[in-house]
Structure formats: C-alpha cells, structure tokens
Amino acid sequence: MKQNKRVGVIIEVDGNLSKVGMYNETNDSDYIWNGDILTGPKVGAYLTINQNDVKIIATVFSEKIIDLQNDVSNHEFDNTFSKNSIKRIISLKVKGVIENNNFHVTSKYVPMIGNVVTLTTKDELNLIYGIYKNELTINIGKSILEEYDINIPVNRFFASHIGIFGNTGSGKSNTLHKLYKELFQTKYAENMKIHSQFFVIDFNGEYTQENQFSLSDEFKKVFAINTGNKSGGQKLPILKDYILDADILSILFDAKPGTQVPFLRNAMRTYNEKIKNSATTFGQMEIGLLKRIIVSHKSVNDTSLNDWLEVTEKMGIAPSLLQELKSLKFDYNYGKLKVSNNGIIYVSCDTFTEQGIKNLKLNEIEKEIVSIFEESSEFKKLKYFLAFQRVYIYAWKSTNLEYINPLFKRIENSLNSLEKVIDLVDNIDDSYTFMNIISLVDSNQEITRLIPMLFSKMIYDEHKKYVTSCKKVTKTKHLIIDEAHNILNGQIRRNSDDWQDYRLGLFEEIIKEGRKFGFFMTIASQRPSDISPTIMSQIHNYIIHRLVNDNDLNMLINTMPTLDKFSFQMIPSLGQGEAVITGNAIKVPILVKVNKEKVIRPKSDDIELTNLWDDIDDCLSCL
Image 1: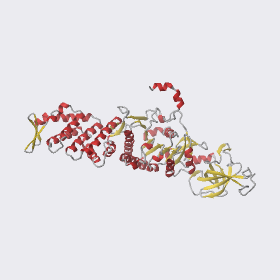
Image 2: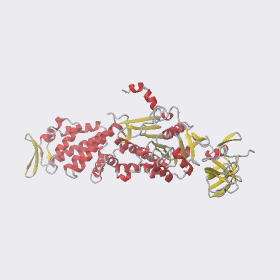
Image 3: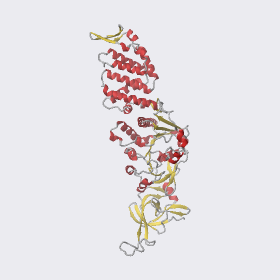
Image 4: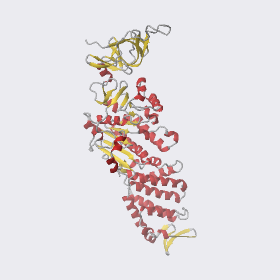
C-alpha cells in the first residue's frame, strides 16, 4: 500500500484553525511522490490531516518559524536561526472532509493534536475539485497552484445566476465567452438548441464577430442597432404590447405624474381597446372630433379647429381636402350656431346639413385618414393618435396645455428614435434563434438605456407566461449582460430617477423570481460595487478576476459567503486571465487560470501600439 508523503504533525488546534509543526526537510515548493508532482506546503496549497479513516482537508493560510535554541534573553546569538535550531510552523484552515471516498463540507470533524499531516495527493484533489458521478462538466482552465484541470458542473453552474467581475483587461470578457463556447460544444448541443435560448446584451460590440461562441449564422443572430444611420441598422423585433403599454410609455417619455401620466393612461386605454386594430374606428373618431369642435364652437378653445387641421396636415392629408374647412364662418342667431361659407349653410341648429358634409368633404377626409393610418408604421399610428388626443383635451380645457406641451416634444423625439431601431410585431416565435446578440455599441444614450429594459421585460414575461401555462419548465432562457453596471447601477435610486428606478426594479424582479421559471441571468462588470445589492445577493456562482477598488472588494465580502479569506486576499494580485471561482456549484473556492481562446474570442484584446504605429497601410485605408 502506497504511503502518503508526511510533512508534519498537528501541534495546536483552535476551532477550524490549527498549526502544524513541520519536519525539517519539508520546505520545497513541489515534490515528486509515487510518480506524481505534488504541491508543497505553501500558502494557498491543500494539505491533508489524517484522522483514522477520515481525511480532513485544509489550506495553508500562513507560515512562520520559531527558534528552539535561542531567545532574546540569550546573549549567545551565534546559533540564532541556524539549521538545527529553527522549526517551521504553518497555519491551516479546514475546508472539508473526505469520508467514504467523497468530499463534503462539514463541521463534524476537527483536527486533533498529534494528527499526522500529509501532502494532498492527486486522488484527493480529484475528490476536492471533482464532480458527482456521471455529471456533465466543461473545462474552464487549470488551477494556479497545482495546474489541475478545473471542470465546472453544467447543471449546478448554468442553472443559476452567474456573476463575472474584474477590472478592465483582467480577462472577464474572455471568461464569459469561454464559458458559453464550451457549453455549446457539449454532447447536448443539438438538444440544447431545441430547449434553450441565449441572449447577449453587448454594450461594446465585443461578441459580434463571425463564428462567435463557435456558432454558425444558422444558430446565431446579431442585431447591430445603429442610431447614427438613418435606417437605424438592424431592427429589434419587439411585441406591440410592450410599446403600447402606458407604464412603459410614461417611463419612455419621462412623463410627470401630476398630469402627463394620467393623460397617457387614458389615451392608451382608448387606443388599445378601440384603435390599434381598427383604422376605420380611428377615422370615425377623429372626424367625430372635428364635428364636435365645429358644432361646439362657442364652448371650445379658439384654436381647436386650427389644431385639428394642423394634425391632419402633418399626417399628409391633401391640402385641397382641407381648404373648405379653413374658410368656415361661424354666426350665432339668438344663441343658435350657424356655420356657412359663400352663403351655403353647413351647420344649422348643431346639425350638419347634407350640403355641408359634401362641401366640407368630410367623407373624403375620413377615407384619407383611414388610408394613411392603415399604411403607417405602428409608431406613426401612435404619434397621430396622441396628437389628436392632445387636440381633444385642449379643446375642452380639461388639462392645461402648458403641462402637456413639454411631453409632446419628448414623444416626438422618442418615437422617431424607436422607429429606427425597433420592429413591432404580433409574435416573436420566429424572430429569435438559439443565440441572439444585441449590440448597442453604435446606439445613442436614449436607446442604450431603453432597449435592455424593454427587451428583457419582453423575453422574461413571455417565458414566464409559457412556463405558467405548461405548469412545468420545458424550456429555458439565459440572459447575458456584459458591462452590466451600465443598466444595473444601484446608486440610481438616490437620484429620484423614475426611469432608472423602474428599470432596476424590473431586473431585480427577474433575478429574484426568474430561477423557478427557468430564466437565468449572467452579468459581467468591472464595477461590482455599482451593481444593485439586491441583484448581487441573488447571484449563486461567481468568477472573480482582478479587482483593486476598495468598494468593489467590500461588496464581495458582503455578498459572497463562500469566498474564503485566502481567496479574497489574492484578488487584487491576480494576473490576466486568473480568477477565483466560488459559489453553490463549487465545493471550495478555486484559483484558476482561464484558458484564452487563440482564434475565436471577443473583440477586447489590448491594443499593441507599436504594431499600430508600424502599419501605415491600415491607417491609409480608413481615410
């Protein structure tokens, strides 16, 4: 039977902390033992405490030496710290126990004085870093100290919310890409494309290259939204109901709660119930509004008729159809209204004459309104309807126009921007594929803050509705947000920003409730301290690259119960691509060097200035 390499004996125990008196010869960083290269007893390394049939696994968190033959009261210093007078003492912290050939975390066993300490073998590392029998895993890299292959269990890791954090240049984009690339290459890849969908919100355009995530265009769509072009680039399919919602529009238009929000809610209730699927009803309603303005001339606002005509002109109604309306004369005889032109009476006793309807071309105008409305985009339809609603409320002075006018300036700008980047559809069944990348690198600030909220709400609500109707999870959705601090900033509530507060509340609901519906989030950020604490507290598994900001490090302490002291202390000194993996899917925190993809990887590499300066051809080709 092979003997494990003995390195020392327990000499002191304090709870789950203990000290080891080391044998004199055990000060090498690595050992060859039974044909394996084993990591020596250095800070961060594993050691095994042997207690009968149980093996207590611990990590080294500090070491020191004591002098056995000399002290400060001795005047003979010639032998101080000599080879034969010093003793190496290392401190251990218990991580778990190997019992019945299985590693688990428990407080049932603690070290005892006299227990022999041995180097942790490859077989023991297999159990510590290992996975359950027949469990599907992906390889992410190698452990930094032992150079042991680190495999992540698919079920326990990806069926959870994931956080990837690290400063710029630390390797978090490569890690995010590596995770999902490896997932898509497992033996379940084909069935995965039937049961799951993945959505990446990409603020910097890092994941838009050909064959990204090793997926062909058959299974991947890139929506490159560009507000700089007149066309807006590729349009993102969004269900109509998610734009035609009063609460969404109130946020979008930054409507004030006193008068603007009630106006929008009343208007959208009418629109959704009567107008959105019926151009005929719209034509009848607006011609009806015109007639009421004319017959109620004395009681309506003086500019109401001109306001109505202005909206129809903006719609593109032919001027010849409107000419007669602009020439009306209003007379009152004994308090009764008479509307005429060129001696012909159009309205008498609040009733339109047949000649009036004919000469004013009301039927022709109605048909033209219906025709234009039918051929218009959903955004133009909404804009026309709201404009007529403005005429309606101002005609009878139900709302002071000075409170409504600023809203309409924002409506105009917002709907014009949205029309360039959003395609409103009745269903999205065929709109998205297996992997969908929404690139916002060429979007303006308004679209950048709107699209993630609107899109995420839509796919979450639709998935939740589907799972609820099936009464079980048969499909999953995975939302991946890179540079998540752009939209999940927890500081925004202090600024009384209703828009941002609504958006943050939405993502907090998704991350709190989504798991039970099979909806999972992965967020990557260089500033975890900016992320909402509620969102951070709901993350189950973490990959932490180098972080140096005190606020970021404090956030990790407060939200990651599985992060031990040694791993935490290593975070500021991690090299590029190095990370700490911890969470519910990992038995103990792991220091890992994530493999860097050689060919297909995100567009996040550091710029080589000397290569840039040396290549004059590339520079000239851009001119």
